[in-house]
Figure 1 (spheres, rainbow, N blue to C red):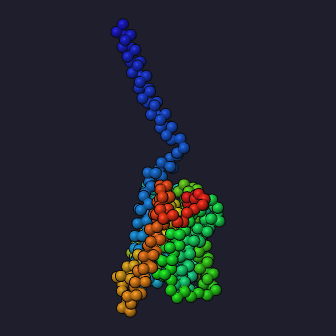
Figure 2: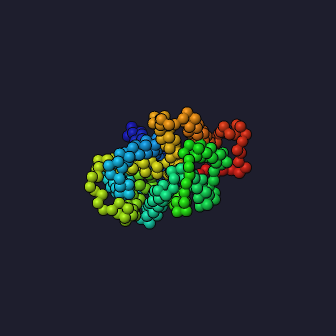
Length: 357
């Protein structure tokens, strides 16, 4: 009888152990439905939006200062850009092989497509700045945001922005236009280059965001995919513009630092485009311009500047800041589904539902 009771007890214990093993497996399999290892790794490696925005601002401001120091003693901007691409291609590949991120590349044709649009954006923007006045160049850059919105609408009619977002962007562009655009002068070739720069910039940023979502790559992976193709594309134009005798008196340390900062700039830029949208990235770029103008007005006060001119500049920046804050507020409220400040005022109502971009 004792042996029988002991046998029943052991059988019951074995069954309970089997159920304790089976139940978690079934539970985990149920939780895994609709997800993939890529989704899990993406969630673990994701950073908050403010990380990408602050990183973009800090890296951009830093590389501007370093590049100014380089240009004083080594004025080869095309060669510097090519070195940037080569250093980034090597750096991102080594970082992936060291385990800092998982190497996953786009198809070669897609990589060269994005690289081609981005190279065209750089080339046409430089040409526009060379042929047009600074005022016209700044005004053309402000049109990048509506240009991207129109291109997104053309490529996918289901994507649109609410009237409230458009109003906030209009306020932002107006303020930046008053602060930066003065004495606009252009010619036929300069106008054509400015239009081509808008198209290439919009296409590059839209394709960057859509390909990240389509192929499931992050900012580091897409950077690793397109930097080498960009270096290949710009080799011939660089030799034509700067020649081959550019290694003499090259500040190697500053160039390496500039290449590292360029990688940070692209990494944070692609992160913003992939996690948010190309329009959000352009608004972050506008915020960087606002900071440069503000500190330039306050810290580097020109003796001939009147109080009225300083007041107009700061007032224009204030208008742009209101537009940027309003846009951020509206997008945040759209995510949570709560009414925003314009809803409380009863203005800028949309008749149709808005699809989030």
